[in-house]
Structure formats: C-alpha cells, structure tokens
Image (spheres, protein in one colour):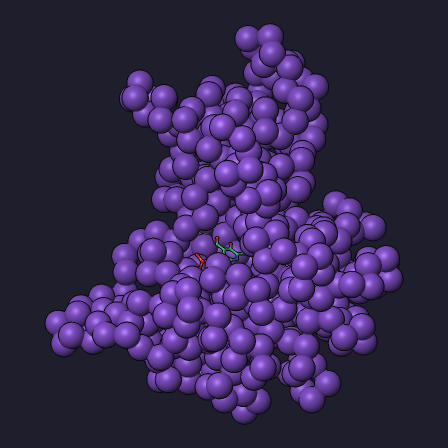
Length: 401
Ligand code: PLP
C-alpha cells in the first residue's frame, strides 16, 4: 500500500521514545521485578473533595448539555482571578479548552499561516513540535549560547539572533517553570524575552502550566501586562499540574488578546464544541477554593530528597529542581561506557534503557526534548519509592565501566 494514504505531515510526528521503554517496563512487571516510575509527568495523591463534589453535582443535576464553546462564563472569570489578571482582561479574553494541549493547538491554529516559524526554548516539551507541524508551522528550537552554564535557559540575545535569521517568525513560546529541566526563568529573564518579542512584533506565548510550583520560596515571575505587551501576550495554563490527580479532567485555558481568543473559540466550536461541562464545574471548584499549598511543600520536599540522594550517583550531575516537578540528570559522562553485558551506551536513550532493564528505573530520555545527553525524572512518586529508585539507579550506574 502506498504512503500517500496518509498525510505527508504524519511522517513528521516522531513516535514517542518512551514507547519502547513502556514495553521494557511491562516485561519487568510480568517477571514481578521492581519498577520505579519516574516517567509519568503527573500529580498523584487524592483529588480534593470540593472537586469531586462539584463534578458529581453537575452530573446529578443534569448540567450535561452543550455549553458556550469558549467555556462557562463563571469559570472564565475565575481563571482571571486565579492568574491575577482581572484588571487587564475580561471574560472575552479567556477560552477554556480540553487540557492545556488544546489551548496550545488552538493558539497555533489561530496564528500560523503555512511555513510560519514558531520558536521554542532550548529544551522544548515533547508535544510543542508535533502540534506546530499539525498547524502547518515550522518549529525551531532557540539554542542557548551559554548552554548548560545557564541550565539551558535562553536569553533575549539568543532569541534576537534567531529572530534576525527568521523574519517569518510568528511566535516564541516559553514554558516557565520548565518541563523538562525543572528550571525557572526569573522576572528579569522573562522581561528580557518579552521585550524582544514586543519589539519584533512576535507573539510571546507563555505556557505557565506549573506556575504554582515555584520551589525557591519566591513569587511566580509573571510577565508584564500593559498597553505595550497586551497585543502580543498569550498565557496558557490549566488544571493538570498545580492540583492533585487532575490530569485526566482535561481542562485548560488561555488568556489572549480578544481577536486571538475569538479565533480560538470559533475554531474549537467546530472541533470539540468546548470542553466537558461537568469537568468545567470541577475546575471552577478547584480555582475558587483556597490553594492547597501543602502540595507545593510536598514537591519541595521531594526535590530536596532527590538532590541529596542524587549526590551519590556515579557519572551523573543532577540539576536542582527550582520549579515544576522534574529532576534533570546530565548523563553525558555515561556515554561511551560499557554495561556489565559488554554493550556500550551511546546516548541518553541507551542510558534510559539500561536503567530500566537493570534497575527498573523508568526515565524519559533527553532526545524527547531535543537534549540528548540528559534524562528527565518526574519526582511525584512516594518518598520511599523515590529514594529506593535513585539508589537502584546508583547501583546500576556504578557497574558501568
Ligand atoms: N505544557 C506542558 C509544559 C506540559 O508539561 C503539558 C503536559 O504534560 C502540557 C502543556 C499539556 O497539558 P494538559 O495535560 O493540560 O493538556
């Protein structure tokens, strides 16, 4: 059968590297060997009672008919309050979506003409590129001149250089705090990038999905919102990461200039008719109750636990987790080393496969984030499992020659 049965762009969707790791993990489970799952970028724990109640009430009371495609008005208002944006925006600037993923896809579809360039930071989250390609845009990663010195954070100068090379750029997307690196751009660093976008009349899309999880005790470095930045600023957020066990509720939202928000709502009115109404009621309950700061404290404790345990890892440098819930391991010194079976580990995908096969430690290889040489570990698993997993990894790495 010829290839032409499928769209040419499907070839650009690189299958997830984590799929082969899944098969290896299943094999270990079948043999009843231990598994330490640092792969899943998901919050765990108990769903808050007010969320359960709101969703249950919505079903009981039959609030299950079609809603406004842009989302429930009361939720859009709550989103503005949650993000501290009430003075500057109204509900016409807010679109509620099926997860932050759909927010991103809506933004991409609303802004891209074929072959427009989208710029991403230097360790882009796995789905940015496929979503850009699906919107017929051309994704480009902005490299950091300072590289690992800056823990892969890019500067306004890095962005400016890329913009000069690519005048057809439509948007720059920043994820802060960053999945996968667990790093945080400070307020001046965010301002630096925003100012470059405004100057070049390029949209600054901020994915702030982990914004409550700033672990250094500081406030979230929110972008400047004023007459100069308003036309170019788009903020994407959602329910999935800042609350416990909420990834599957599939609610996200975007705050954008009214013309962009209108375009997004129009688009999704045709392809989803808006997100699930009971799930929006659940989101409303989440946003209108006091924030569960214990969740942040839990993640901070896990980040500290990871930092102290990771000091014992041979051949690996571990970056402190400043935001979000990921630990980023620099495993470049493992490359070229031999496993006890004789095979040479050539790259971080090999290191990930080795750790899984020998120690049952599931990680996401850096290749998935265009950063070969690194591993991403999600630290939301139980403290005891986290410690046992890092120790199992240390033992396995100690056997490399
Ligand atoms: N953006 C980032 C940086 C993410 O890590 C994720 C999910 O892992 C998403 C967007 C998508 O979020 P959602 O599950 O709400 O669609």
